[in-house]
Image (cartoon, rainbow, N blue to C red; front, side):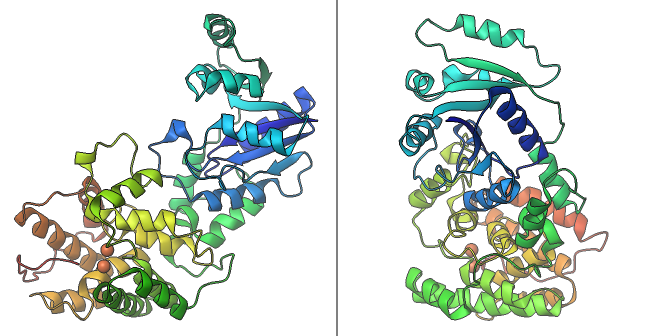
Length: 419
Ligand SMILES: [Fe+2]
Ligand SMILES: [Fe+2]
């Protein structure tokens, strides 16, 4: 059997992926092409990816019913970094006697010598460079000749059509509410809408999702098992406050309650451990030095990446709100604001000015979010504490959202800060 192995982040998979895989399948007479989403592609270590299980679900949707194509969750199921050489080993065990062909873009083909354990890698499979129109094919020949004898991959070149679709452009389109019809397979488009991926649905949070939604009691028990009594009680109060704000502004109160319950799930993880978790789940760019990280903000992004497989019934917009609750985000939605502000004004907080902020949140979510951010920044500055760069970027974006309105005068007690 001749088996194609097509790895990538597939965030999201699109018609460009299907077209090049089909071209390779035909050109090389492959019996099957396996689409293998990587949990953390080593060459994209800094990128923040959609949770691997969501990407695997999208890949499954993209290839379902298409002869010769198959989704493969091998890397998603494996702990640790995802190296192609390990995947190829696993595939040889699963498909004894199969001939493996690893499909890569031409840019990638001329960097194969930098991959993990190149000698073992090159003996495990042949490589297929997918050559787009206009890409200088001679570069591949030159690179191949420069490789030392005994460390040259078996490399074939397949010319593929130049479909100019990029996953990052698709994510941008979804976030802006623009159409991705005819750019991705329809089932992928449906899944993105259902799960609220990439900001789909503008945070209205009314989309159904796959998996069974956990009950509030189930989540409450998990939170009480994870956190100190005081922090768990805070989470429960934030859940009710965020739910009330969501209901007030026509958003999904049940989902806001879930976001509130889970938002501080990793809040009590020690600083060194949360930094390690953030690095391993891709919550921070890999090239960020330790001294540029603010551990106190990482529990949100870590929870949003680590917890979804545990509760697959919780929709994407809940995780997104949790992701954004510590720093805010330039693409924040009103749903995100309910958690962000609810965290600050839950009933146990009694700092000077909290009543005004509560009233403001009832009247105008954006103005309240701006005030909450301004307050948080003042608190950090006055305490001489570090500020995560995202906090500043998010605040400037919310300043624009809150429009030309003057920020309301809210009395601030600098001695008391947000939780
Ligand atoms: Fe928090
Ligand atoms: Fe909190």
